[in-house]
Image 1 (cartoon, rainbow, N blue to C red):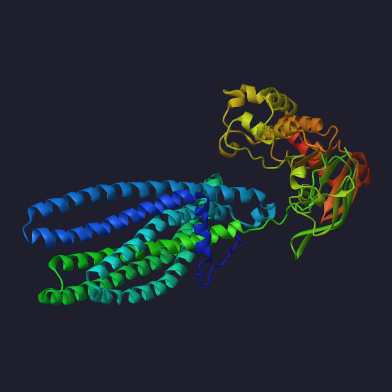
Image 2 (image 1 turned 90 degrees about the vertical axis):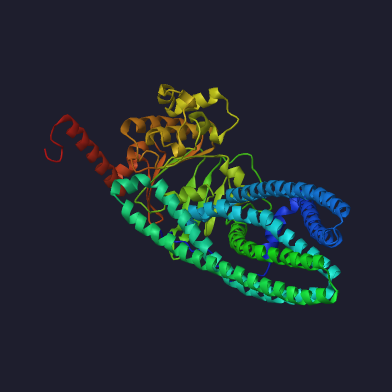
Length: 606
């Protein structure tokens, strides 16, 4: 069931560093925090190295020669540096936390802003779960890499450099022996990087599908329970989680194998130092404190390498996430403003579809050579079978899509010359499935016109026929509607949607099947609101219930992307074509229902 008909981009090329540089570029606006962050890390790393050197001095110059006064002096210096180190640790952890939240905020805001600009076609082909996964979990991983990953890597590199410097100071011959082991670790890291990154790419890809499955399961829970699909859904979801477990298991196994290899190399390095250093002590070339410090510096140098093995695995996760975040950021809107696009100030005027072609899929055209002229202020009704192209016509008018052939003109001008905001801000739409946002009734009516006062909202609700049921609710206009309007009926949501469109005072009004799922009483309320909306504006109404369109100036029957009939309600009835058959069938069904209520025989059986 969880096949979304979408296959995201594969990232199979070797890691070139471009993604990492783009991730690190996220810190550029916050460079002051980064500088402070790096300075505190450098302070802590330097102090830690000095503390190890002081320990060697305490052993050689105080403990072994039983000099208590020297020991006190070294201990006092040691204690003072401990406080400096503690303050530095507090500083870089605090700075890392703040930096991480700032980067996470910036990335999510950028992604959300970019999503607002993408065309409707992008959402048609991209699962919601994929998008949510990019904005939430993937941005989290990227932010973690930029902050805590950067912290660990920087600290590790500084520890390695300071340890190497002090080892050379103590005994450069032993230092060369230790340095000989470093290429082994580097070569191992390069090989493991390639393998681990591939597995984490698979993990992130499967995670997107799991997020999509969660989204569908939660939003469709009523249907699931009504059809008893719980067990089947669980089995299908289990298949996705097993795939993710296997990919994650392989990545974890490789990550776990890398650490013992680093530890094994470290053990050989320490063994070599103890052996050769011990010989140096016997000849007097080194001291006991020097050997102790040298071993400490080996741990000091190789412990970060071991720790960076863990960080390295996390970095592969973050790179896999970063690739997907940036693939979303790089998505280009299919419909955007031209450089010369302008706001005409009004889009009231004649509308003309001039030999328009359109297809969602190149092999399945929806509109073919479609032409239509609509006069300013005219009300056009569109009827016909499902899939005939009715919604496509109004979606093209709204410029959610653009024609693949032909031209659409408003007021005699090609509407692609207008800015998108100029068109969208002057449209009012009431859809078949109304969508309300979490918040109050007042918030939802005001959603399209935030400057409206309470009196204006109430007036729009009265025109739409929503005021009466709103004031009967306990909190009135301050009533919470719930997520997606779940606390209201379909009819109530539809009336609020209509009130929202009325408040926005659009120049072009579109109603797409807004009465198909409501009762007769609500339909009559919506009908009165629609009649108020159609005054002095161009209107397009799509309806299966033909009683809502009888007053339209023209009714168009749309079949297979073509106008097969056109005229007024009376004219089409006299023509006795497709519209006549649709209307008489609905009229007959309505009569049969009325007879059933009265307990009489239906006309058909009489």
